[in-house]
Image 1 (cartoon, chains in turn yellow, cyan):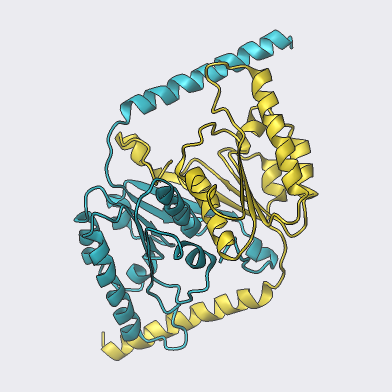
Image 2 (cartoon, chains in turn orange, yellow):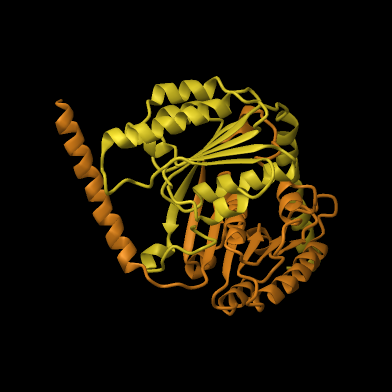
Length: 201
Length: 201
C-alpha cells in the first residue's frame, strides 16, 4: 500500500468518527443530577465511584459517601478521601456479619444507615453522593426497595448519585440514567493473588 | 412463614457464603504487581483507574498517570490529583486530532508519550501507574503493540499498572492479571444529557 493511500484512509476514518461524535454532542444539551448504577461481578465498581468523587472534588464540588457493607475504616479510599476538604464519609456497615448472622441486627444497622443517607439526599449543597454496596442491603431485605427508590427519585434535583454493588435490582436499572455492568473476564484472585492495597483496598 | 424459620434460613444462607469466601481467601496468598485492563463501551473505565489511584495514595504509595488521548488539562481528575503529594501526572495526548488527521503527527505524539511511560515502568519507586486510554494508540497503530507488551512485561515486578480504553487488543487480555469489560446497559448521553462535571469530566 502506498504511504499516501494509508494517510488518506486514516484521514477518512478519523473524519467519519468526528461526524458521528459531533452529532451526538450537538444533541446532548441537558444538565441534571444523574443516577448511576455500577453493577456486575467484575472489578471496578467501587473504584469507579471513587474516581468520580475525585473528579467532582477537582471541580470544587462537595461530596458524600455512605459505605453500606464495609465495616473497616482502614481502606485506602477512606484514609485518602476523609482527610480532603468537602468530603463527608460514613462507614455504615459492620461487614457481612458472619459471626452474628442475625437478620434483625443487620436490618437495624442498614436502616440506621439509610436515615443518614436520607439527610444527604435532601441537602442540595452535596453535589455527588456515593452509595457504596447499597445493592446488598436491598438484596438481603435489610432495606425496603420501594422506600429507597422513592427517596432517590425525590432527591435534590441537581444531585448526582452513584450506586455500586453486585446484583442491582431491575427497578434500580429502570430509574437510573446510566447503568454499567462490570463483567469479570479475568480476576487475579482466581490465580491465587490476594487482594492488594491500592487496587482492591 | 414463622419468624424463627426466616431467621434460620438467613443464618444458613449467610453461613454458606462465609464458607465459600473463607476458602477463596485462604487459597489466595500471593502478592505481586498486577496488570489490570479496564475496557468495553460502558462508563467507568477511567474513573475506576482514578479510584485506584486514590486508594493507593491512601496507603502512602507513589503513583504515576499518563493520559494518552486527552489533550485538555481542565478535567476534574487532573485538577484534583495533580495537587496531591506523590502524584506524577502527564497529559500526553492532543485529543483525537480531528483537525490535523495526520497519522505521522499522531504517531510522533504517542511515541514521545511512550518514552515517558518507559521511564516510569523502570522506576520501582512508582507503585501504581495508570495508562489512561492507552488502547487507542494501539488500535490506531500509533504505538507498536509488541513493544508496549514487552515493556509492560519487563516492568518493575511489584508495580501495578492499570490500562483503560475501549477495544483492548487480545494480546493485552492475555498478559493481564485482571480484565473487566464495562458493558454499557444504559447511558445518560443517549437520553440527551451532556457530559457532566464530576461524572464524566
